[in-house]
Image 1: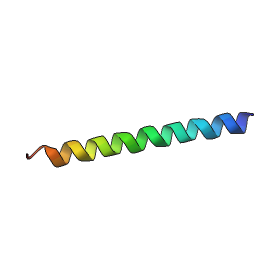
Image 2: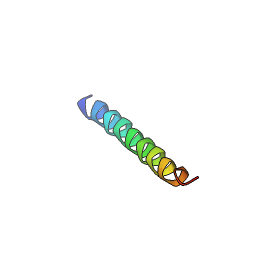
Image 3: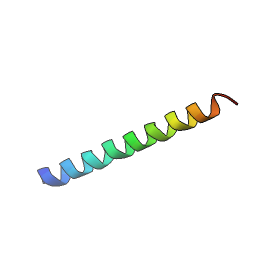
Image 4: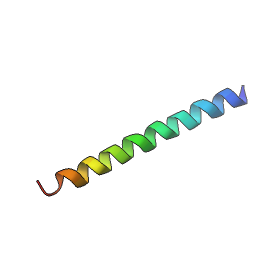
Length: 33
């Protein structure tokens, strides 16, 4: 059960990181415009 919880937590962290990276890249790309 701990492994399942840890897996879900890691997936949530990965999704958060990926979303943050996409937002940052989009913000940098749109800044000159």
